[in-house]
Length: 135
Image (cartoon, rainbow, N blue to C red; front, side, top):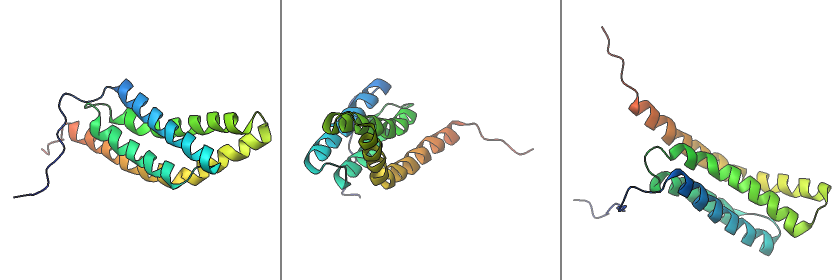
């Protein structure tokens, strides 16, 4: 007998819109906190991005895994751009450097999350496809 108990979700889970809003808000909040405290992003935002990948896949309804995988990179890039403009001002050369530096510092977390997420999406797609019987 196993002593660990799996977390049970009551109800069907989050819709696609709920997954997008929750992931975007969570990533945006932690990106803003870390950029305002450290003037750059780091490991805290990276761990939150990984948690958003996993949480979106885990707590979304069946069929929302594609949205849960696509949203975190877009949400992070958008929030990094917006908060860079808000915190640094409207200087194009500085904005470009800071946004590229933010994306580069979070690249390992985005790649790990994307690999895990796409594995889950493609695995579920392969399981739903009917098998070809040999004749």
